[in-house]
Image (cartoon, rainbow, N blue to C red):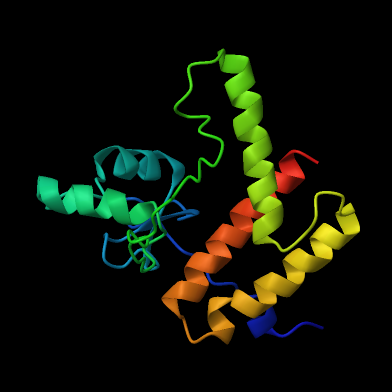
Length: 171
């Protein structure tokens, strides 16, 4: 036979004034305590949700700040390194000449690929396996965690990643 305590179950009732229905649906109490809930029946949860405003009591600036923080899930972020400058080497004076656009694009593309191979210390006839192997070696060498967040190694890592992407996209 079962004990009386096993048959007893905790029943939550609707917190709406003068309502005796079961409180099946939960709703947050307020914006500061989103994990503390009030319990309502179906009719009253609908009524509560119509009236509840997460942003009530906030100024326009506070609302904008809250929405901006939602983009990063309220986690801290740091500004991107603005000191990185992209220098385009134009050894063949491609950017200065006025030849047709297709010719310019292919020369620039070829120049970009050549520079990417140089940045990874590879030759143009390197295999895909060699490219990946060299990329892994350089990433390990210049990763900020192994260089005490050295700014130069961080910039070098960015260049390595861009060079690798250029080669893989055109392989």
